[in-house]
Image 1 (spheres, one colour):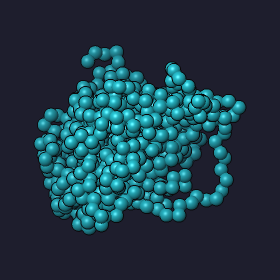
Image 2 (cartoon, one colour; image 1 turned 90 degrees about the vertical axis):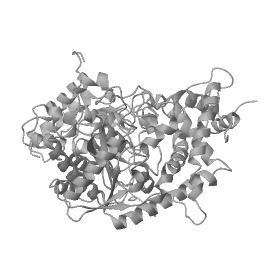
Image 3 (tube, each protein chain N blue to C red; image 1 turned 90 degrees about the horizontal axis):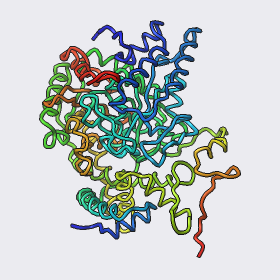
Image 4 (cartoon, each protein chain N blue to C red; image 1 turned 180 degrees about the vertical axis):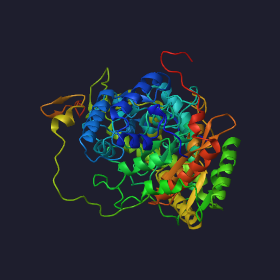
Length: 512
Length: 98
């Protein structure tokens, strides 16, 4: 839809800002300052950011403006500011992963994806809030206070990347980085009415991500439009020799796929509905919006078929064995010796071993302790075969389900999350109920396939729901084609982006 | 079905090097019981004929170009350490004396 770019710079998409910057209509300093002002005005209520790097962002913006003025050829996104999830290390900017054990830590190096953002000239606005070490689905497990959903400040913004998604929904940033181990990009996208993409495993370097579960983690774009995700994905993606799991192939054309999809034509595309990811446990409004979108895809020429993935019912169980097992090993490095917190026991001999235990006892939050103990149990002698070994077999069966389904369909689809955003505190005392939020997103991580969540309208409670698209490994371009088509078709019906219907946030200095 | 006792949680916490308070031990024993009961269903379909997958997209023989790179400067590596001395990490005594 050819809408006029808003006069308010924070309401524009990254693609629109890129055009305005290249046309010399605005400067990066103006764009960056507008977002810093917005953060100052609304982040007291939203709490999407753990750290705002105003000076550094403005310095980058000034540099980009000077280079552009000098006629240098710059990256199309040069000068468009971005927020980065706090699990990604940033040289010179505090990085905590939402944990007290890393409070005040300033990394001495950049993650590869951050190097790429800097090389492309994107000013970094700051670091976004998250569940501690990305363990959670609500951002309530952050050691620094929860983030609030801009649609309703009493509700969760999803998690673990609730800060990045909320920053987009509250117009505090035009782009953000998230990480997705079991749904931490897609589920926050669904509940905040934003777009989130988990690339194919290995499609974006993991070097410099504070690892949660190394065989599942993947960083990706958090944006308000599908095209913006494609633009960002092309900046951060591609082979990295510093990550041994990084795919050697070039990325498929993602921006081109998104632009093709914006035409709204899906003639000949086979869309597979995963029957196991719909139905019981899914809120009526979530299901209704999903069915309506399937009808839109049909009308756009897609052939909608139903596929069965019989082992997906065991995905959640496998995930909650594999993830804690890998996490218990990855988090062993937080030992109070080389970085972060060190706590010395108050009595007895101060040995390294006792310092480790005291440091971890004080520095880790409840959910982190829960998962490390669970992982230690699953990996311990006598239980390994029954738990971790079995979970790895389930992983094989889930991969086989995907392989069979992708013989019948080019993409698979489902609701992104079973419900809309729940109230803060509602599931905090029930770990299993919290884990169920990721039931539809987890299979993709277990198999390494890419996934996207696109805003799919409002449920009966007036809160946003998401439409999930999954594609075969290395075929991320299909997500962008189908996602952009659906976005175009839905926005034609709505008369504009879904986020236009979010309530205006009170700004600092005014009353709600 | 009770599978994880309070004592078992204490043993696991020792292995994981995490000091837990008495109330944490009690709470975790209850919670882990529920979680383990739920995730144990993986064994229903994990039959002997199914191979295990450890990595979603396995790659083999991954090497980077054999070109020397600048290492992290020692001062940078030590900058975030709780304690450092003489260009090294300073840590508490490793062995307990008597």
